[in-house]
Image (cartoon, rainbow, N blue to C red; front, side, top):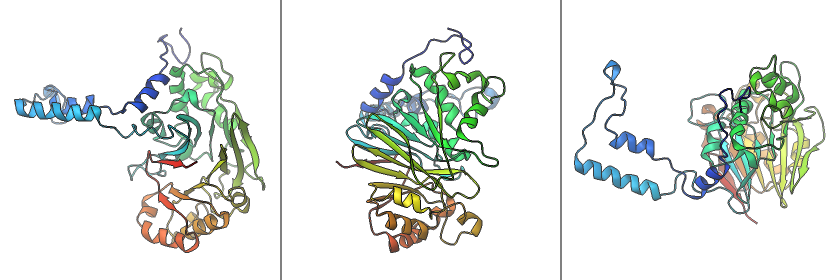
Length: 365
């Protein structure tokens, strides 16, 4: 059927089952790699106007390439570990910041429950790709939580939603985020600016606002970023999400606490690290995912936006979290990582890990 978001009338494909099979069966894509090794007419950067470069391979090299291909076919790939196949887990989709200088995607985290990606926190640049690499299915998501509307936390949202058109999803996908202030729109207005039929940047996807035109609705639920106490933003089917405002300079921002099956996961978002309400809400959390974007000697402007290593350590200790995961890493914080970890440990002696893209953190029963 021809629609505004599918003008050619291309048939939908329910890719969810294919994604799940990929997670369970290895999920490594070797066709491109094999093509580079044994393909005799693959284009080369040196081909210029002369067309593809032809490479003649000896029988021995061809057999070696075939052997490596067979090994790759049976070996588990990066997405094969099937994060959260049993029980509860957090998977890091993006562990980086807003600069493309560290090989990391921007902020994004999946909460897996028994093999299903139930919750996505932030959708920064690059998380669209990582979402697919993780083998997640948008049809499984119960909601998306945005900590704030900086590009490194929200830029891939329209791409991820558009991809969901091909999943066959029909049920609404709620999007929780902060109220607006100054240059930053509230979450509802943000979605209008993206998808409004007449004035939206992607107006052809207007159906995301009301569930029309073959798309699923994405109802916005705003949480007051200035609220001094946590509120329950979502509750249903064994999943609860609480949110509270945190200080991120002039940017309206939220921190979240996700509760599933008696386990509690706190997401700091970007914050200065001195929000008492967030510390109280996160008290005793099984895992705190904390942004570590600046070193201890960062300037005042940066410290008004992000928590210093000392502030991170104090917050984790005050909240008495069981485990700490440092993420939202940038070149300036990675350059001082050992000393920053030492500063954090002066205050917080518990388990501490440093995030990498696609890392899976399982929460034991």
